[in-house]
Image (cartoon, rainbow, N blue to C red; front, side, top):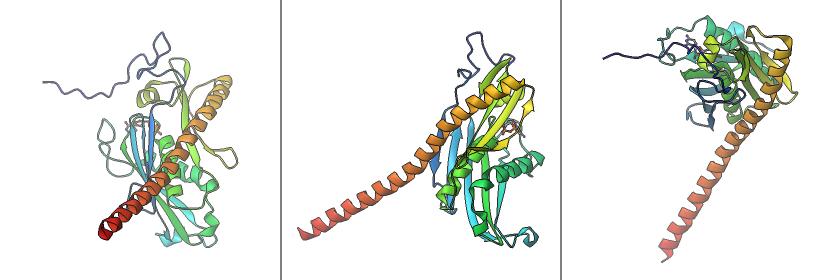
Length: 264
Ligand code: CDP
């Protein structure tokens, strides 16, 4: 019996009909599902499934800063702890946070901070824990997107949500939302985050090679899909409150029935 572990990127990422390995068109997003308010012990939380990525985000605080020397007397700080579970990738990941996790935590702090009113929390920290349960390319973008939902769920005042997605290039074609294989074997990967209150880019990283025209075209298609993902974020937030309202209504009608039975 042979044990097959799929870790090799396919040689051809795009076929002659312009279809990608997972059947997507060049500018298609992977399926995305988001849910808000799922970690009971957190001040706010959210979960996202984005293609093969499965990610939880949980917010705690504002609370005291440890170590104390990191505290700022004039404002709060946002601390992000992006961590990949040891089983989240094909090859077992070491449990200790590596350089990549520290880098992604830092770029997440930078891309999310502009929407927060950190001046409201002097000497305190907002702590955001991001756990990657399964990874398949684009985890930093999915993490930023789900983290913004967790912050909103915590009732932290925000200027707007933040949304992220990666553009890229594979087999000479411009693509959107790179999968793990496309990230590994493609020619370029360009993760972008936007802060909606000012329409500014708060994350722009680039790995690979692309012409200036290709870069501009990629940014245009990234912008279009950021809008779609932003709508999904808003829907996920609304769904939570629709569910709560329905629960309250259900409870009320149950009480009415109980009361009615007693009268009889
Ligand atoms: O996840 P993201 O694209 O933001 O970051 P990356 O550093 O470009 O990593 C791309 C992908 O490589 C991840 O999403 C994982 O699927 C994979 N990866 C891995 O297999 N093992 C690691 N230790 C780190 C990443």
